Length: 258
Picture 1 (tube, rainbow, N blue to C red):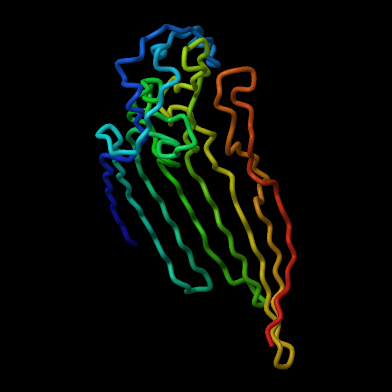
Picture 2 (tube, helix red, strand yellow; picture 1 turned 90 degrees about the vertical axis):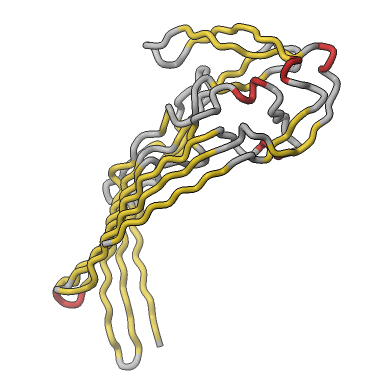
């Protein structure tokens, strides 16, 4: 059995600043929207419109800023049972948190419209999930030697859902339509993966000096259909699945070793 702990801090990250459009050049405007959650109903959000005199001006640089920061804390628990009495097992549990000022990588993409001076790009990004932050993940794998030299092996995986970012398109701003975050990333998540199980049966044969191995695999034995990605933009398609777990797959195989 082993336990490990990791901590990582990131400070003063790189981002794009538009020196021709300082934060003070933006004016707050109120917008309302209907949240997909019926219990929340109509919500208000503050967006920001740019001084019209600066709409055609740009002076973009890539630099370090104090606001881009994140903290990672994670623990890994592992249990390993070596092969004895015809069976072996490996179990692992990871628990982590990765929070900070979240962005999707476009903050240094000169082809994007990202601008750290634009307050619309800072809405609800603090204390958000960073990258693919999975609070917990469990893996259990093992094998057992059946009679007649038949081996059965399996792997079970369970984990929390992927973080999602609920977004809203705000129109009517002098600089054009802005996509803003209405809440921190990670408040919404895809569903928990809890029924993902793979099995394999294998049998080895010896024919003269040739060794044969036949395999029979069942991937996603329980035919789970967990949603792995979904539409996050508020609108008529909000929450629509865009990627689901692959269905059950059965595979036969053979390996010949000379």
